[in-house]
Image (cartoon, rainbow, N blue to C red; front, side, top):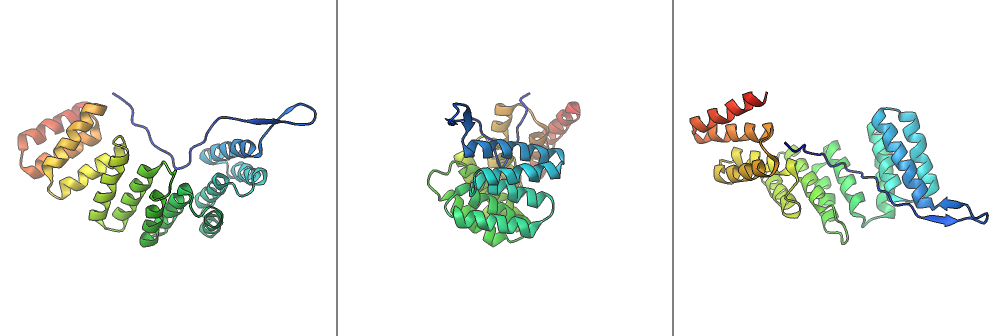
Amino acid sequence: MRRLGILLAITLSGCVTVETSSNSEPVAEPKERAEARIALGIGYLEQGNMYKARENLEKAMEHYPGYYRAQLSMAHYFEKVGEAKSAQRMYETALRQHPRNGNVLNNYGTFLCKLGDYDKADKFFRKAVEQPYYYLISASYENAAFCALKAGNVDQAKTYFSRTLDHDPNRVRALLNLAKLEIDAGEFTEARIRLMKFNQRYGVQKASLQLLAELESKAGNEALEQKYRKTLEQLG
């Protein structure tokens, strides 16, 4: 059975370029030094070492002032330690300096959604997907969908989940959530086909079986419902 992965909002990349100093010793470019500090900072943040996390993220910003990934990482740090106003200021700085950066727009939209400012968040998600050379369109549509759900806008969430899958058919959370919304709306055929295709691609999963059992229960197919519930019990 294939393990299903989780996409992170901030990814850390790899390739290092170097310049040569006057004494012929290789010296990392400012951007690469910043990337190294970002990687350390995020690592410490995940371990719960907030002091070291902040220290390294501030170093990243010193190495490469105005670098959007350092700014987003610093904003993420402020969110984690409950400093919403500091996070807001950092996001606004990033937006002033990078007004057409899809990653900045997407992350700020996510932040606004957490604050409950759903309409404004939606505007930033929409703006993110409109940016040329922004390649995480599926992630922004998925974020917009979850934000629409939080706002109670089910129809909009369905539209956004569909757009997510148009751009990336393999986004599992979008697929399962769209199937759930289709079941709730009585669109049983669409949801059934979606979940069957899911099982063919990823193998039988608890999440898809639970949805199939719910679907057949609402559709009045008791035999199929019991079949899926029995399989769920066997999976433990």
